[in-house]
Image 1: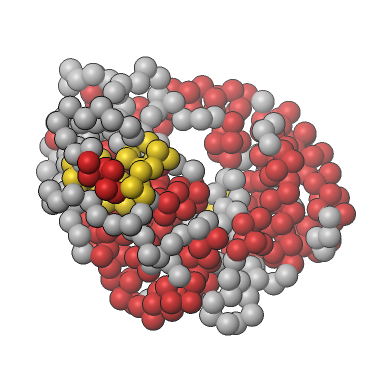
Image 2: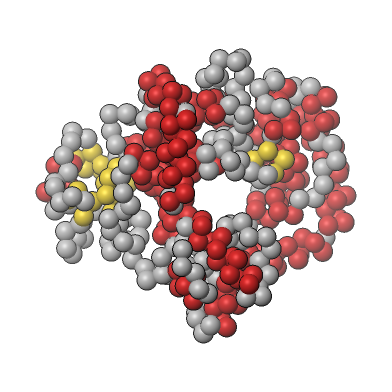
Amino acid sequence: MTTTRTAAGYGAIFAAALLAVIPAHAASLKSCVDGLRRDTIAAGVPRTVADQALANVSFDEKAVRFSRTQPEYKTEIWDYMAFLVDRDRVRDGRALMKRHMTTLAQVQKRIGVDRYIVAALWGVETDYGRKKGDFFIPHALANVICLSGRRADYFKGELITALKIVAAGDIHLKDLKGSWAGAFGQTQFMPSTYRRLAVDFDGDGHKDLVNSTDDALASAANYLKKASWDNRLPWGFEVILPKGYDGPSGRKKRAALSTWASRGVRHINGSPPKGNYSAGLLLPAGRNGPAFLVTSNFDALYSYNVAESYALAIGHLSDRLRGHGPLETRWPTDDPGLSREQRLDLQRRLMVNGYDIGKPDGLIGPATQNAIRKAEIRLGMEPTGRPGTKIYRALGGTK
């Protein structure tokens, strides 16, 4: 599939529009933050915490832009999976599972969620706690509440809850960093989710999802358990469809495994699916791509971030951590996605060729997309701005 518009173009236009009105934003932001400070105190946040958290709030163009815009640059499923389930994430995850073997075993025993699933969620959310987000949450939320115009009441509630968490002594204010929307910690809980489901697993009297890996892993497991995770079931598994299959599909259109077997669906090893449970047929790239039978456990993963691609990444990464290999069926594209190592190498090659992408970090933002598009035009390729294998190889990439 191709897209006619990209986030790069819209991001640049939006940023220019915002920069043109920064003075007006600064004035309205200050007035709004003053009101927020009063509201948080009235809601029960100690004045000292509110004053410290909301001091010197400045205009954050990035937070406001992220809250207002939906990316027009569509991430293909094969790009998403190549990025989130790459060799490095599998290798690192296996090593960290050994390091935290005791904790993961106890989480599985006491909470009832498979340790490989918990580790995979940790890996997908924050690269095993290494990339928790750089937004100072009180300031980011203040910008979103005051300037975005979207769901202000919801985000105000999250801000108040976040500051109450700080006031309770579970999280230090300086550690309250994460996403523009307010998610924080090694497993990225929203403040309201933290209040409902965070767990003090290490027994120190604090539910610290930032600095305590034990608390973070147990809290993620608790979330999934409350979302009806059942350790007796797999999340799902890859299957083969019969030639010309035109039957039902969709994760919610569940049927007994015996029914799927009667429809000609087979396990990837060729055997008919067996088990006393139901599953739905997931076709993330249509009938010509990888196919999966997914159970109610897939819905529990889906609930964590409300995206089928996200749930699939966690499920597949958990299988890789368990020792299974890559997907057997290829994605239906002649331009596969790139791993993080390849994306970083692509950025370096773009720089060597004179394109400005900022600092190479393996993350594909508007600057890198714009550079890719320029390189594609120079090389006589369709200008997509997408970090795929074709442009990578055209620039000499071999990893």
